[in-house]
Image 1 (cartoon, rainbow over the protein chains, first blue to last red):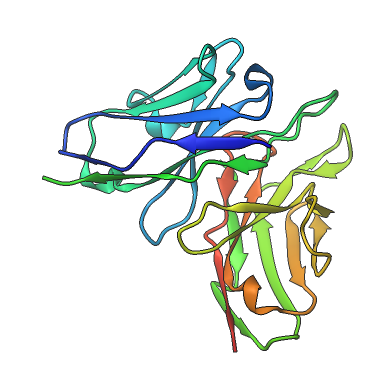
Image 2: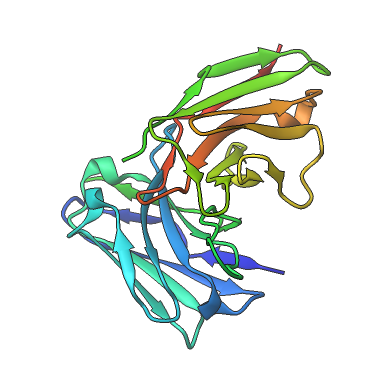
Length: 124
Length: 113
């Protein structure tokens, strides 16, 4: 069965960076795009960006451009999201979320599987 | 960016009654190439990640009870729970995947009256 298992909670100081991992299993890692979604405490969902695990190509939301880096390691079926220059407003739960398969034609770009979430707390 | 606006922000419905949540997009999310609306609905319970309920505006995800249904086209969409169960208490989000950045509605909190 498909599983996305994320790394544990982090506490960081303002100005620092955080790197969150998402290990995939139960499917062919390189065949499905992976996204990162942020959710501040008590708030809604915010898309951060997407990575193609096969090529490593990425696309980021303009809001996070310059501060976010998404990478992957095909040998371990793991994607990573690194966010730099952290500020208190970055305190949130970060989710990895997979796109479903794209057999042909228009690719469905909703999120069919989600990781359990990683809480990142930014505090001095 | 496409702005998604849900209504109401919160909703209290009696057990067994119908619950209706609306979602409006600032731009049509209808793909002319396949004549489908790029609109999904998710359910999120406290401490859990969102769970996919509906995609292409009206296709129910495998395993989702048939009391959940989605409708609408273009810019106006609805999620309906035909007979509310206690386990349906959650926050519900719509999401457009017509283009990036993918955007979500602000969420609708559903409670039992």
